[in-house]
Image (cartoon, rainbow, N blue to C red; front, side, top):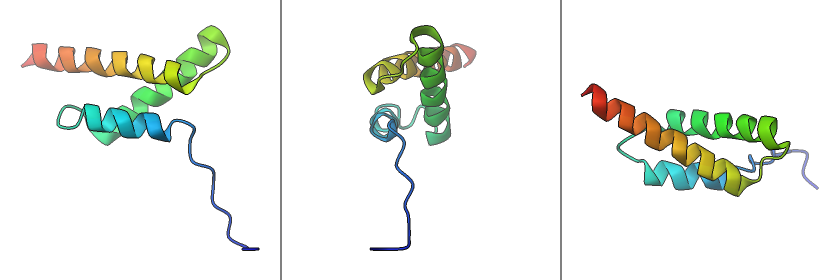
Amino acid sequence: MSDRTHPDPTPYADVETALRGEFAGIHSATTVTRCVEAAHYGALEVTGYAHPSLVERIARKHLHVLALVASERG
């Protein structure tokens, strides 16, 4: 058995990876992570549970809105 322990990856690692690919060239990885985190906390607050598919849908909406705002600013 190894003495080294590895922290469990976030349950949203796959969500972040997918959204980073989807929004590459539009948003930075940091922005994607922040949106996923905000979606996680929002889902918990509203529903009491944050299933990865729900977090992904909420984060994607956030990222679309941010892209729209950025495009309107020019």
